[in-house]
Image 1 (cartoon, rainbow, N blue to C red):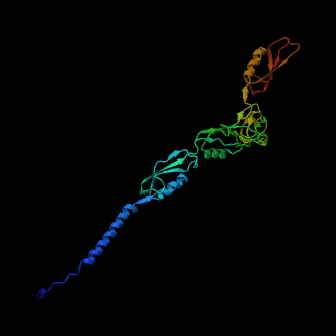
Image 2 (image 1 turned 90 degrees about the horizontal axis):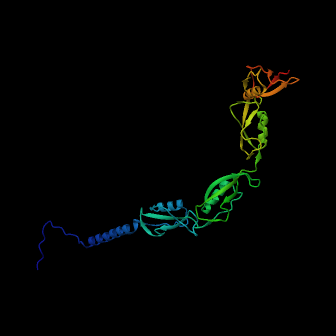
Image 3 (image 1 turned 90 degrees about the vertical axis):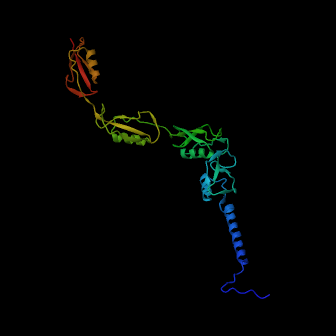
Length: 308
């Protein structure tokens, strides 16, 4: 047959086969990438943190893009106290980002023994108890000639006693060998300070002075009395005397000896009697310090008793 007539201006279209193949390949690749992203790219695996501290385990988990939930605690004979003994989900499990991982920390063995803490400094003893899973309890202090000051004398319960974790253990701590406090009343502040410091004590001087029978500037009182037991470094406070207070002397002339003595002693004076010979009367004839005048508290007033 004769060829078909050619239409003027018409174009010849390229074949579509190769384009369709390319489009199909791209579609498959895109779908594959999407599936990989959905099934793999959004997931992470729980890291291996067994035996690690809570802080180290938490960091590894959060670095992996996961969250850490509320921590649990349980007894374990395998894992040390405070380390991770279990993970939920287990290490290696696949989770989506920001999913939660729960850690279980070891409380140590279900039964622990009280360690021997004798002669350990208090800070070390407390640390040793905590490492064993026990709680440091009440601290009392006693004098000891054999255990250094600040070190443990003993514990309650005693070493070797079995206790549940977190049980409290009371400690007895040494105050060192006892010091017998010397008497320094009546001495100058310098001499008193030297004597107390030589005994191993610390000295403090009270800022206010007081009226006292002691001479002005002498020690009127000390906070720890003579013969009391103190620990090395304990503080003794010294109160310094202003000297005796001036007190008005009662007039007791003409009174009986008994009444005169009572009035003077009530006013803070010592009383001494001077009797004439032969002594037959009981009336005060005169007094060494005139009535109405003042005299140092604690000083002596001499009463002269009438004779015949």
